[in-house]
Length: 250
Image 1: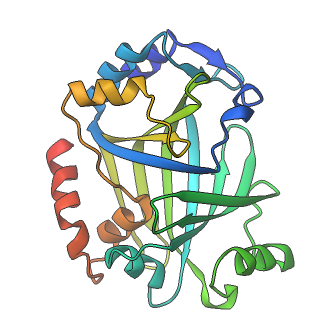
Image 2 (image 1 turned 180 degrees about the horizontal axis):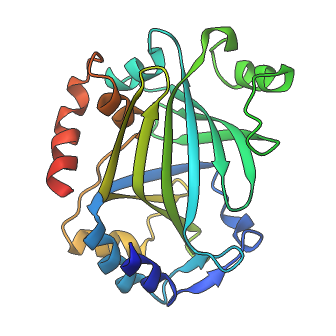
């Protein structure tokens, strides 16, 4: 992890306010599963081409996410069955900036991801009238049928290209736990790179680097993979090859 921190020092910084023009709440995204060693090499090759988000002198940030699902795991099963027009519902804590959001992510059958969210007091993750209204307006699910199924913690680096309006997140040090099941797991030697762009935008320096390294897109859902790792009773045929790739990469 130390090598990642060292590489980040060579990037020009960008603030949250400067990133406003690249919010990309509706976007096309591609994910790549890489090793920690790949991350340091990729960072080296992107210095000078991307800005790195910096807040209070820090360039790598801690996130905590709590995912909702129904008692019979319908959101997970929709993913396992390859259903498009599917949802994720979650609380997310941005630890360093002391912000918490309730978020609904929708993946359409056109491959477009749309994220809506509302701000709530930091770490006050309760279903009240406001959050109930938000979830039930932004998704087809009733809050009375939802419960927290999984908690995920990870570190994130955010790179930005203002010219191509592209955001890149690099997540690593992934940890999962389920209070309902009393289980936990972690993937410490793996990283997830996600390239987020406006639909139709094909410009990306990072995509060229990944292509040169023969790293192919690999869909990766932290909720789905975490659920597979924590709950052996779930059917997860769709994710078996992904779990094998994770073991091989890590």
